[in-house]
Image (cartoon, rainbow, N blue to C red; front, side, top):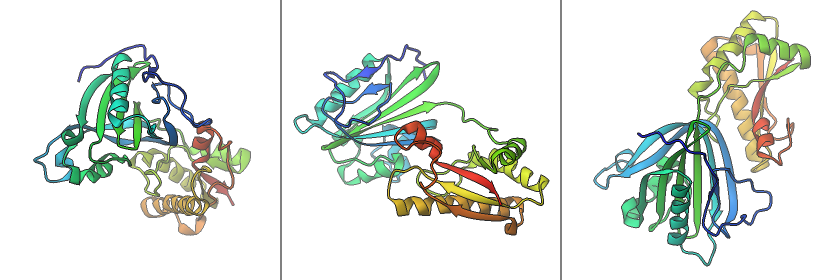
Length: 301
């Protein structure tokens, strides 16, 4: 696949203007279509992403019908309500023109039946994680670069809503937690953020990329056999309170289970607890703050 380098000027959709959500933060890669109403931004962090690059109507399974390019990077998802006086075709055409003008190379595009049979549009959600798909939808996948790093864009325009999803390709930082840094954090504050532990979005499933961090935590606990600790899960302040409390509790329990089952740490040394959004590290009013608030901590007890 040809690598494209360009200055990464902001991609502005024709006749664009700020969206109708005062505190909604967009992304430097694009400007939302004029009159669109921002409804959601999800910062998924480093994860795998399936970018649709072809449709095979003769396939039987999701994977056979939707051919994908499997990416790993920082994933950001945006959702908008379409302006009521603009057609899906007009919105799609403007996004495509704007991205091409901004230096992106179109990898795949489809309109209506080209995106697969209308009765099977739900497979798009299963494969890509996108939420808005309808018969007659329009889809665009493109690639560009920024600061020497590849950036992929997926745009899906349905009748009433559209999504823009961005994957910033980068190597996940590892080694953020060491046995030494855990000890220093506990000595200084009695708690330490366990950077390097990653979960599937909105789930308590620990990603395989978390292994270096878990190795470091287990090493520290073995080297400090007299120490007992709480494992505390935290979320940001978005979403329903009860859901966040359950999620934070389940994530803390998942880390405890990994340490006990995979590393043979004595279970009586550890207690897991989730506190949801009750103890934020930063403000929940900004994306950066919410990212800091989604964490797991080790607390001395």
